[in-house]
Image (cartoon, rainbow, N blue to C red; front, side, top):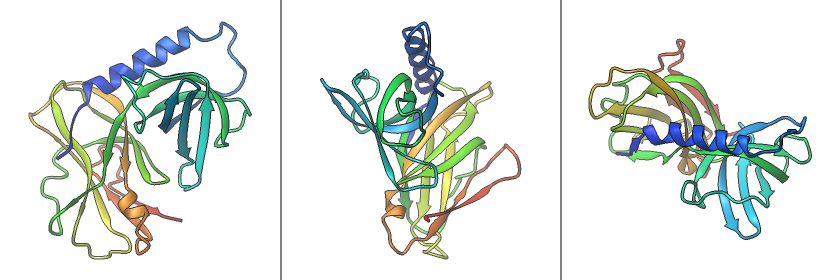
Length: 223
């Protein structure tokens, strides 16, 4: 079970994005500001190195900046939301960038469970705003009821599959207690290397209890 406290992820994103924006130049660049889920590969006295993949693509893009992040919030190896401007002016091209803000998100990995089903995976609905595969990660932007306690929020895959070339994976969302409150938006990134690195797997189907539109299954192809 992967338990996360959702409270901190919203507050950290807001605080860091606003604080860095307020400290930026008074005359911001005309270049487009981009938002992406990236991984902090390296933090040193020379600055920061990030990697990411374009949605639906496996090519690794490397971004560099002399700026450093607060590693008490985002440590090397963590995936997080980065607000940045590429010096080239082109999106999804390796090179130097200027970081405008960043925020902590939910990090997780695909869990393999015994049997051919996952009991109670759809107990609570998720309001899905977007979902995309980027390299070996499954990224999501969702709305969930705000709560201070932990919840089981993860991706799970039954060990026994009807079609091993296109396995079924499930977004599990379950609170420890019933929640009746307002909702907030969160970003999450799950490591699905077990699927991407398996040559027998051609793709997968994501199942979720989606309260936004009639879309409970999304099929993703590896290529």
